Image (tube, rainbow, N blue to C red; front, side, top):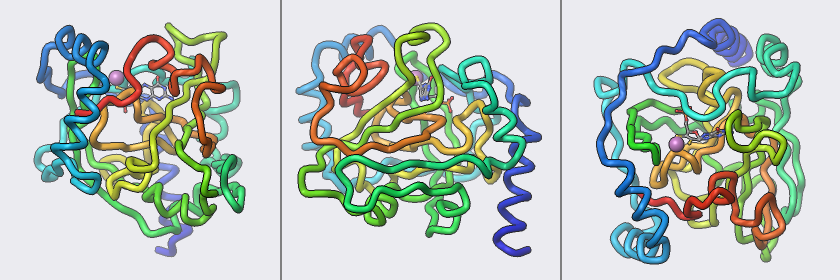
Length: 260
Ligand SMILES: Nc1nc2c(c(=O)[nH]1)N[C@H]1C(S)=C(S)[C@@H](COP(=O)(O)O)O[C@H]1N2
Ligand SMILES: [Mo]
């Protein structure tokens, strides 16, 4: 098959698979109240300890195919209810109309098609996803390293943070306030396991998990990993965005650096 045919087949399979996910197949590995306490009261300590114990290039643990959770629990926005009208139609059409806009403190603002991203060198990784609510799932992800996209657009010297703007409003918490957004610093942005994933477990990313593109950031908690990414903005500060804390959950009181 040509690359183009491959991509078509991949995207068509994804559209067909949307909505067929079941809950379950994940493990509860820690007590969420204590984790939440930790996240709420010791950000500086957590971040410093995490960075001291794990150098900036340390990889999160990677697993084997046999370890992949039978079903991977979707969380937060996961269906058309949270997405703009027309999103499902765009998915059915293979996301041909979708674009990833990269702008802000960059030398060459660029709009990428999904095919542009798929054509770039890819990275695959099987990793454990930890949600602040206290569950974990292991999944396999394939995508474009964020570093490659950032090198394509060229960061200006003032660049300090990478912001991910998403298509959805969180059904319970954020409706009518702002679209889901998240941010990371340049250390995490250039980490080798930080990828813009378009495939999960060998199939196109399902709608529930953020189709067509979601962030995988393997050393932080799930809420940092923006799904339904439409726009990446490079900034020098975060206080002028949303509620000013760098992300939708941070604006609700969660910590900006959510190391695991
Ligand atoms: N755009 C967007 N990204 C999001 C969320 C969301 O509601 N909207 N939820 C976050 C949370 S809390 C978690 S745990 C993960 C869930 O990813 P999953 O649905 O693939 O399990 O996505 C994160 N990214
Ligand atoms: Mo989460």
